[in-house]
Length: 550
Figure 1 (cartoon, rainbow, N blue to C red):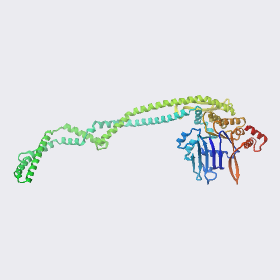
Figure 2: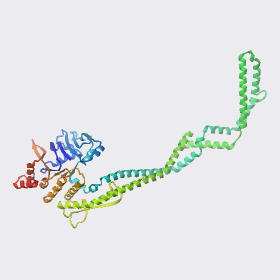
Figure 3: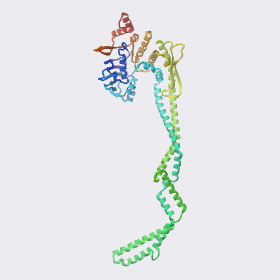
Figure 4: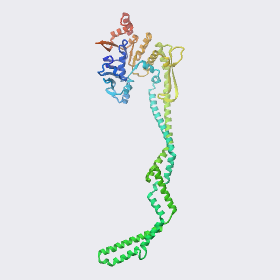
């Protein structure tokens, strides 16, 4: 509930501080006295955009501060989501600086207007002509029925599930698009992968292959040269080995003449042993040397394939080809497994869809159950409010698709007079009728859910007599469960308040000021008497005022 309001330097208000109680609070005052200024200041606290033209003295800061007792509002989770410190005595402050910039604070923490609006919607509801038009909108109609049907828990579960459902659908669509793109590349990737797999890349050593190819391709020249070298080494008398043996014999003759000659002889012997080994190797190579055109062709073909792959994939190493082959395998596997992934995703969506359908069915059934109760109560109240022939119909139809609050279409239909036909509220109800319908609906809602404080802004316009008395009784009844404010011109309603404030203007040095005063019992009698008979107060008006108050 709103416990206090402080306004400084706003419109015609220099500074005003007022405390409020629970129950029904009446606000009265002559036309133009400044009741709209009071509402404007309160609207700023609730998140309305600020305007420097609203500031009384543009050289000073404008401050509007409201204190709310939120102990019974169950708002701790909301405060946490807004990253705010929770306090049962919550203070909201708006400031408009001389520069025109505005600031908002909740419990002294700076906040954005979005955060302010998110909280204030739970604190106070200003019922104006604009809000009456909300009654014709689908969202508000659902809000009314679901409030009565106690669907809050089901709606929260449905909302969470719907977010997940849409996310899964989006994911599935992305998978299908990905599949379509991969399929276009699949055959080509498969061809490339097969081409790389056929050559067994891990077993290819390109240097060895090229060496084998050169040997097979030059086998005749190699044979000739091997034979020539053998001849040079082993031909009798003139061969290198025979010559070396002769040199060894000569050195042997002088080896005993000195260590250096002995060393030379040993070196010659070593060279001879090495040449003997070389000759043996030459024999082996010559024996193993053979022409193999088929092997030459096979190796040449393999080298050509590798070089072609290098060119095709713009690489120069076998390891690079192995990496490309592995990447292609991954793409192929992903494409081949995508159908299974899509199938699993579709099953997940169907499972969630079934769950959402179950929740939507619960929501629908609770709506269906409460609608006759709601219509009956509404028509009874409207009859008391001077609309005895008013008839209401709430059409609830299950659709084949999910919406944000279930699977229903909902429509409020209204018939004001006998003999007419049902039509949409916005087409069949006048402004005055909509105001009374809204009051009736609010009073019904107050029986089922904890509503925030509510302020009725001249909801009684165009109403008089017994109907105004019924309106007052409805608001009085509502105030047993919630804090109710009403700005009124009717004495029958004003007399039903638990407390009564008067808005009035004063002039000081050619400057007009708006003030708000809480009336005591005697002042209240005078105020209601004036509302009954005008500024000239008669004894009968005073007596009538007392009678109304009693």
